Length: 127
Figure 1: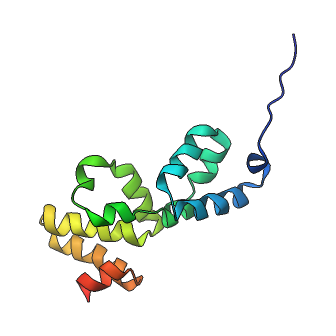
Figure 2: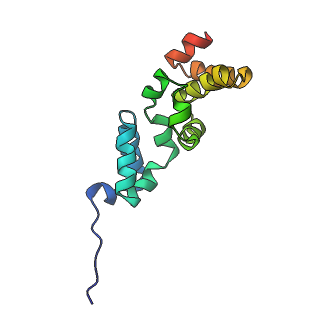
Figure 3: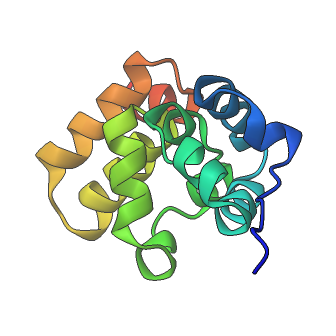
């Protein structure tokens, strides 16, 4: 019986901190590519699940239609992004809470966080 050795890509062989940094930079441009990385490699999935990645993940498409994201996206992604301090996630959640759920105080608090972090849409709404 032969012993199989597992071969890792160069990216998988890097230290996890460096993997996370690389994936975090990728996340700024493509949420879908991060998902593909997580599906392709258990090693990279661990690196991609770090708060740094969720802080930087591109939610721009969701900011265009924040109420539409109520039906299309799990709370898991938004909750991880909020916990990591993603400004676009705070903006999206603020719009959802304020306009859809009529929870103005929670909505305004999220929009305020986005504005204080200098997210343009948050500044526009909050002032």
